Image (cartoon, rainbow, N blue to C red):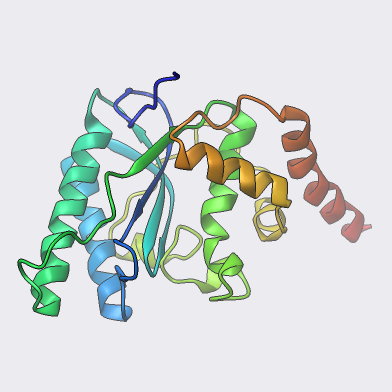
Length: 216
């Protein structure tokens, strides 16, 4: 059986997902989202970790992170999750009523440069796929919006060049096979980027070609 990494390898980029227990929400209103972004900023100040992308959804969160030291991702997620769970119970008046999060977070290493861009797009397009907004930048609680930076969330420089037409790429609809692949690998804590390199190249190149055609 293949090892399922939890994100304690320094210098490796991980797609991280954490969910609420079934049937419950992590964020019920504007204030709940805002409080979490402030906790994220504090966590980033406490633990040396690179934050490349993120998205907060009503019942789960996505991160694209790179720990700089052994166990840094574990420390980051433990601090953020525990502080947030305590806050949720305190704010809702439900102290002592069990867990807030479903289980330990999922963390899948992103192995290939091209998959870094695809996973970043996957993360930022979550609210569009859920029909919460029409465009990624309209969702306040992700790296596609400036709100995080205003609240002190420090974004690290990408380890790969950002596509020159990133906005066209991130607003483009992913294929179902791409979505299924990223979801399956993440759910099973398996590496993202072991195959489908040709599809990845096409996925990034297509919106860039389209944008170039539009300018002609």
